[in-house]
Image (cartoon, rainbow, N blue to C red; front, side, top):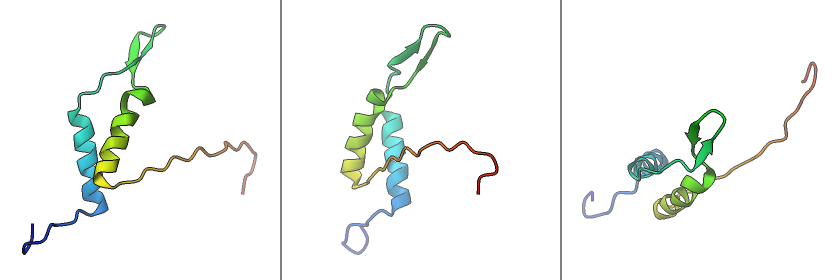
Length: 75
C-alpha cells in the first residue's frame, strides 16, 4: 500500500508474478516420447494452471496460429 491505497501492478509486474507462480507449482511433464525416451509438457499439463493464474491477476492471453507461407521472392 502507498499512502493508504493499494498499489496497482503494471503489466510487466503481473507477467513476472504469473511466471513465478507457475514455476513454483512444480508441474510434471505428461508427455513421453517412447522412441527417444524424453519427456515433454503437453498443453493439458500447464494450461489450466496458466488460466487460473491469469484470471487471478486479471491478465489475458491470446493465441494466434498463422498460416504458413511458402514462396520464392516473397514481398
